[in-house]
Length: 231
Image 1 (cartoon, rainbow, N blue to C red):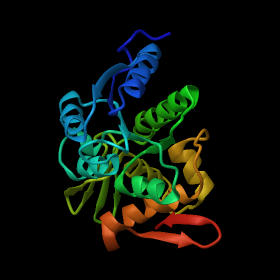
Image 2 (cartoon, helix red, strand yellow):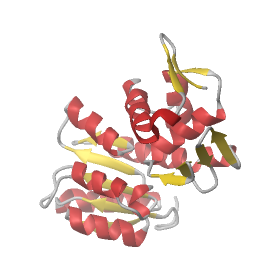
Image 3 (cartoon, one colour):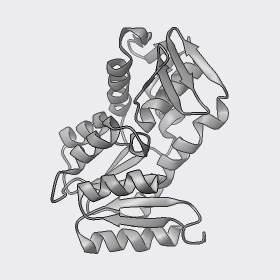
């Protein structure tokens, strides 16, 4: 078993003290250092200050909800823009899940949750964050778009574009496979990993966000009946 704190810091933003303490014990046992916050404002501050490997955000917070917290993290400069996020919620509606993904969440776990499943999802997110940049060195250029793997930064006309963690990973995977028609399942396996619990629509949500942020400069074609191809 890993020593507590040896795997880095996770910020848990959860206003229910029983759930927060449960997550604290669970994650410390796995080898993570845990920092707790009970409000969205405190969570924003601690994520910016601690620069954690990952943040777990409850949707129902007393000041503003977790969806708003994700939006603020992704839209502000600093550590929060790239911090992987797992949403934790009592809601199970498709609209909430899709909205969370569109705002930049990396995964979505519904209460009551299985401890084993939650840990598996956290590890899967961190593998995706740590993995792609090791395999694709240097900078890949796609017209005016630069995909800087070592810095995990995308630039449009030399100006950095604020991408969520999985948005960048998807862009990097597409850039590394330019010209190939990739199915949604190939993209899920390559970016999210074979242990991903979600469905194919996750790819479409993230593609929509990349198109929105990169605009007409992003030459991604839909290959009907297959998936997507980056020209």
